[in-house]
Length: 450
Image (tube, rainbow, N blue to C red; front, side):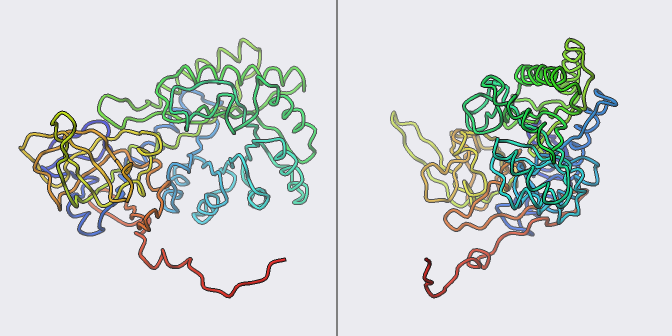
């Protein structure tokens, strides 16, 4: 038995030359469920939930707030049940995500609602079911949430999303806390303080605390430290002005994971230990009590747990300038089930999953089947020269933003998601069929619209 690098889930191993996940052989999974296929290591997923929950509780004790799983990374009814059973919260940012959580009978008082442009229908639904918090993101939203809470005869607990002016070292498309961004209220411009004042004056809103999220796929603590310091400074200013202390700081998520060898995955205990030291020292500096500290890991929980299995369809050699040859290996998925390489330039690793090859690797490019030259999953990788049609390729760490950002581009069918544990496998999201693609087509007579 050969154990794999840290980019694979904890219950993955190579056994007799074949990738085995949760006790299930890759060839058996592909035969039973087809490819492309998202394979979740259920035990790994649940252990990562507990890892973050235990780390928060250990390092903050009575000041530990809630771990809110960022559902945008990946959500299904079954996954929501795992999260509920673990006793943590869930963060939703659309009515659709809220609907999935409610379908799983997720406790509403552990749901946090995000989004920079929540509709009135989404806000009204959140209030009516009794969500824990709504994270307010704009001045117009203050009026909307207050008005809709009044109409429901409720006082809604809210957080304010603050932009602390931190440049996280990550891709611009997933960096969210510098000034020129669509999210939140800026400390530097004064809009944060204006929002605080308006919420305090709103009769049907209860400002519980402040929130920030500096971005995603972050590997260093400096950005988190600076952002949290600025939140605490703002909380101290609030105390001085309004003569009460805020009860919660939600410092978001964005903890990075390993996608290729040599990268690291944030250790929950190390991350929470550093955060606790900072929070306690900064609160002491400003003479305020340590508030409840909440976090929102999504990718850090879901990402490492899932492996995508593809079947090779074609291979071809392309001669480059200078006479160098590159092997193109095309699989039966691509940018419709993993858009991150095309969108962010994200990097992944891959292995031959169904057998061991003793043939030397060649310079390869792993590509999908879409009618786009940019449909590249891995731009450069060494893979065995004898990879041929019918072989299986496994790409680890696809649990975050693979299935959740999947599309029907080229009218591709979205893959199934299966959960594996102790040699058993079960479907938790079925594979789409062609009837699903056709179900939205409508033939109707024209109507006059005035």
